[in-house]
Length: 228
Length: 228
Image 1 (cartoon, rainbow over the protein chains, first blue to last red):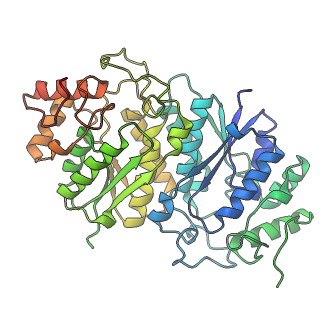
Image 2 (cartoon, one colour; image 1 turned 180 degrees about the vertical axis):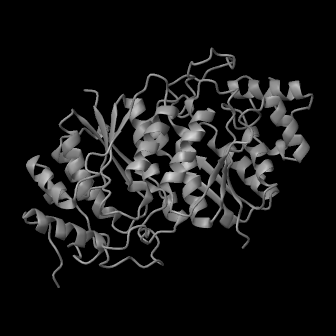
Image 3 (tube, each protein chain N blue to C red; image 1 turned 90 degrees about the vertical axis):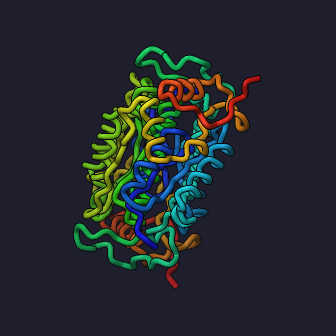
């Protein structure tokens, strides 16, 4: 089997799908999906599988990691149904951490990606973090990824050089839609809604951000919304 | 319930037990155990439970996290039975990474500890890494933990300040035995053997290091060895 150039963290959402499309330009992919008891886990897994099929990724180059302990730890409305999901407030003030923040989540995802990359000989780890629409998530900021790069350099075997790549971090969501369209990314297979697993709700933070992005890009959103 | 001062990563081995004894001087503990398909997982879990009982840690302050994906990722003789365990070579040359190295393992453990600490309001995370007996493990070196501290500072909510503590990192194994004895740590409940789940084998790297340490400390090792 061809050695993959890149491990991509692929949630199944818009940002990670476009990140995969960018990574695919560098060589064959290894795709990582994590599940942690989030509300729409089943639907996100389906999106992962369909995007992996689209990129002809072998089964041995797909890793679905269960990090259910994150749900047991709690502290987030994404995993704890006792905490209300934020509705329709994507423009929250800078510095306020939304209830959908999962504490230190990206560290878990990146740690798995780096361990896997080290074993299979991949030299890059891609993650689709976006600074602009997660102003309050500390683990989505460039400084966080710079710190993680130093950790990966210090914590892997001598001779291992794994680059952490965040190609969409400075893009607007609209630019991500345009970039994905330009690269032929399968945006119709992505899933963004935090609430529903059938038609997207169109009302949660994540849906609102997505809808605005497609509107701003002047491109129709190919997924179905619940307009009831 | 009293707010715990510290989350301690407690494998059930000697180093983590003495680390817990040191952390217990700062206040109540929250104890984290990870299981990842390692050969002696059942026995290590037993040691964790017994040490947690010894410190009267409430069930809600014990977290057992399954990170089985590490075994699926492979690459280590601790989790992959196709890779031979190193036998009796604790004095391996500096810089050579032994086959029992689990790629980037401590990052997974620390990530869980930091997420949990953030949610329960603990201000310290303790881990019993020891530089001397893991010369080849990149993620056991002081520079690695300094890098992780910066990551934790960058990746947690503003206002969160979680200190990563490695109180035994510069100690010799004999000093760890002495320190544990001095603090009344339950060394009789610990488990170090990489091979056996009944009487310790006395032959693997980990047993040899432990036996030497007790001998050098002039203290009898309270666990049972297979002398057959």
